[in-house]
Image 1 (tube, rainbow, N blue to C red):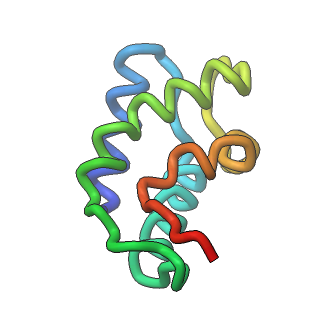
Image 2: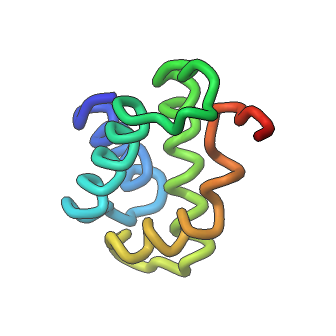
Length: 98
């Protein structure tokens, strides 16, 4: 996933809702996804690739706006707060049972 991919999803959100995504919020999304790709948990099976997450990123950002009641700008806190409640559900990697 590249920063341009995240920018494209942020642009789509802004075009459809008028809500922008802060630079730091885009950075945290990039860093989290990059870290998961390069430092996966040992119980995870193969990373399915970026397309599955990228296809859903605009929906995730819209959900952040709705659930965090964002009016003008999605902040880092909004992303982290939303992610704390949804991480297990959005992780595309099936975990093995220990």
